[in-house]
Amino acid sequence: MKVLFIGRGKVARALQAQLRKTDHPSRLIPSRGRLPDLGDDVDLVVLCVRDDALDALVGRLVAQRPSRAAIVHVAGGRGPEVLSGLAGRCAGVARAHPLVSFASARVHPNLDGALWMINGDRVAVLRARRLARALGGVPRSWPGVAPASYHAAAALAANGTAALAAAATRVLVDAGAPPAEVLPAIAVLLRSVVENLQRLGLPGALTGPIRRGDAGAVAGHRAAMSSQSVEIQELYRWCGLAQLGLAHALGEAPPADLAAVERALRPKPRVRPRRNPATR
Image 1 (cartoon, rainbow, N blue to C red):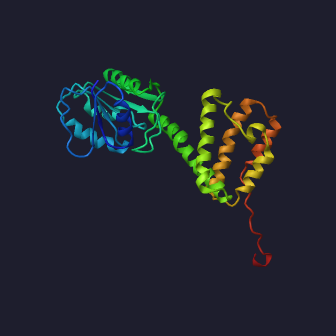
Image 2: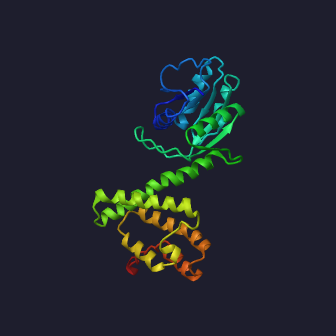
Image 3: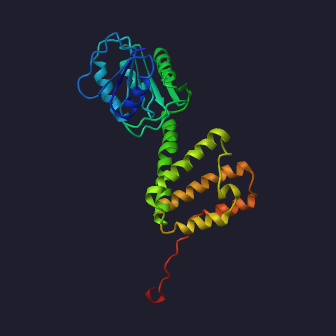
């Protein structure tokens, strides 16, 4: 299967680098500038551009003469309908989003076992599934799951984890830990969490004081972070509240202890300044 990637960003480079290890020939071209005639020698065109750049790129592809290629995009937050203007001008259209974190154009993620969310026309879906399998992925189609909800969940897991790592790093550095050693240690910790998720699932992967119902430890954490920014303090508090449901599902801690944890996670009451009676 001959594949053409349009775009030279992180996703396009990573996908083509992996595809080069297979028998499927591929090319990569920039999305800006003149687009080549797709002709009849391309089986699959993969649009690797930002969500908000898709409309303009589709408008330029509409000017192409009809092609036997199927055209897919990798934007997680948009469905295949964004390519509807190409209907009748190609073999079919689809969304083919790899559920992977692409952070660098030079350091590519491991695609083995990655879920690919693929929806669209039959021919385009078949070819996108073939691409996903060639890259070690697991093609899936979840009918009824809105692209915005799917993308929000992906952002919460991937981008939220990066934000959590940054907050944890800040807390440790401010506490006096050597800055150069903190992030590598946090990365190994997060790797162990991922391993627990894969082996034990949820709620089994939850660890720590909330699983044990240790309200004293939680209160101590909040006190230790009292000088941190409001964002970091609230991040800890809301993450703690999110853990309570998992802890209840595990059933290891007595309900009374988890209720005490919940009280320890409540917002600290604001102390209103007392008014001087003379000013009333």
